[in-house]
Image (cartoon, rainbow over all chains, first blue to last red; front, side, top):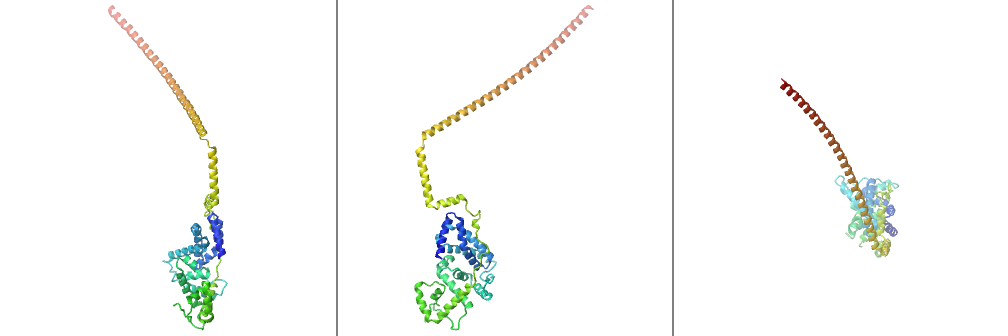
Length: 186
Length: 190
C-alpha cells in the first residue's frame, strides 16, 4: 500500500504537469478496484461501469484540488461514493434501495450455495452497513480512510461495520456448541 | 470474566493497535468464548472473501482521447507554471534579452528612421494628390472645350437659319412692293 501511494504521488505530479498518459497509468492501477466497489454497491455492471467512468472523469478534472497526492485512493473512492449516492438519490422515488436490494448473481468459480448465501446476507444489510463491509473487507481500507471516504467520524464507521459483521456472522457462522458470546461493551 | 469485545473485533479486522495486541492474545489464551467469537468473525470474513472481484468489462482510458487531452499550448503552459526550473530559465532569458536590447537600443536613429519614413510618405502623398488634381483639371478642360465647340456649332447653325428666313422675308417684301406699284400705275392710266 505504501509503494502504491508513492507511485500514485509520482504519477499525480506527472498529471499535474500535463501528462495525460500518466493519468491513464494511474487509472489502470485503480479502475478494477473502483469498478468492483461500485458493483458491490449497485449490484449492476452497467451502473458500476458508468459510475466508474464518471468518477475517473471527475478525478481528472479535479486532480489539482487533491491536497495530499499520497492519499489518491481514498480521494478517488470518495468521488465514486458520491457518484453512487447521487445515482441512488435520483432513483430513490422509483426504487426503494433500502427495502429492495438489487438482484446479484453468484460469484463465478465458487460453490453456488455459499456464494448465494454470502450474496443474500450482504443484501440484507442496509446500504451504509454494506458499504462499510465492502470498504473494509473487500477494499482493505483503514478506519481513517473509510471515514474520509464516507465523510463521517471513525466511531460511525466502526459502528456500521461491527453491526454489519454481527448480522453477517449470525447467518454465515452460526453459534457453536460452546454457547453465545457475552458482549461486555453492551 | 470481562470480554474485550471491541478490541476483539478490532483485532479480527486488523485494526488493533500493536501495543494492545499482547494483552488481547493473553486473554484469548484463557477465554474459550472470545476464541469462539474470534473464530466466527474469521469465518465470516473468509466467507465474504469468497466473492471474488470481477474483471472490468472495458478499460477506462477515455482520457487519452484527443477531446479530453489538453492542447499542446495548455500542456506547455501547464508544465511551465508548474516547474520552478523552467520559470527561472524563462525569467533569465527575458532578462538577458532586455539587457541586449537596451545595450543596442538607439533612440535617435529610431527617430531618424521614423522621420525619414514620414517624409517619404508625405512626399508620395503630395505627388499622388498633384497627379490626381492635374488629371481632374485636364478632364475639366477637355469637357469645357467640347461644350464650347458644340455651342459654337449650334450658334452658327441658328444664325444661318435666321439669315435664310430674313432673305425669304426680303424677297416676299420686294415682290409685294412691285405688285403694289403695278396696281397703282394701272389705276392712274384709267
